[in-house]
Length: 145
Image 1 (cartoon, one colour):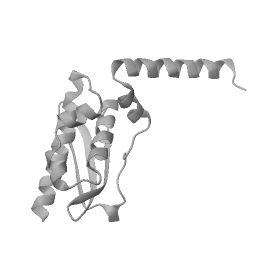
Image 2 (tube, helix red, strand yellow; image 1 turned 90 degrees about the vertical axis):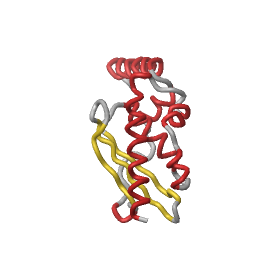
Image 3 (tube, one colour; image 1 turned 180 degrees about the horizontal axis):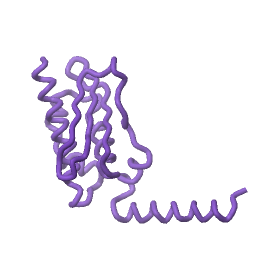
Image 4 (cartoon, one colour; image 1 turned 180 degrees about the vertical axis):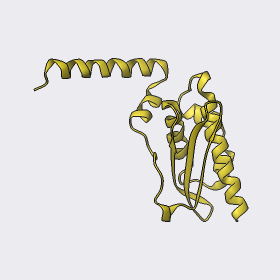
């Protein structure tokens, strides 16, 4: 049976989450609390990886892809960025999994932004970091081929 402190904590957590949803949106907040494709692929499954620190806030972003016959069969990412950066990584990997390298190469920051139902303008540098990393990975892949 929950005590008064447990009730207080749950109420506070709910208030915090509601404030986050108001500042961003439900989809971004849900990805932050329940990230998808976060982490590295097992070493033996990685066809291609790229890691680095870039952008306005020098966030770390790593992208790990398993590619078979020019199709991205698995995509994972890691970041030390904010909740919006986590949501962007989740959405980007979901958009490219099962798709061709050419599809991924044509992906634009607007596509991710739209799929996330809009991110705050002051966080658009996170979109740039994700897309730049993806484009660098594709160039690396094409160079290897």
